[in-house]
Image (cartoon, rainbow, N blue to C red; front, side):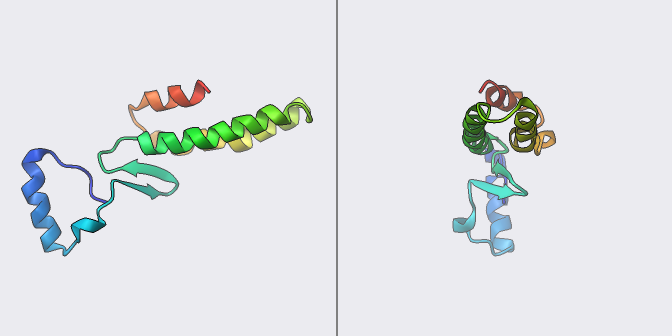
Length: 106
């Protein structure tokens, strides 16, 4: 994956692509690496959307589950499903605290 460059570095990017024989058509806007979706401009919207969808489904499952299981089993389900997914890769997000705030508001 190539990360976005400033306008002054666009010419050097084209030179690098030619040197390493990389087809510009193969450059993607986002990629998934070790379960973390990262965009070429180092933003987290793609990962945020993915997590929001997954955590919303898990939240619904926990809502339905709390009616049929005891609190200890519900805690196990929460930590095994929701918390583990929400906290995975958190150290890579850096200053993007808005991602966490919007995820845990659900």
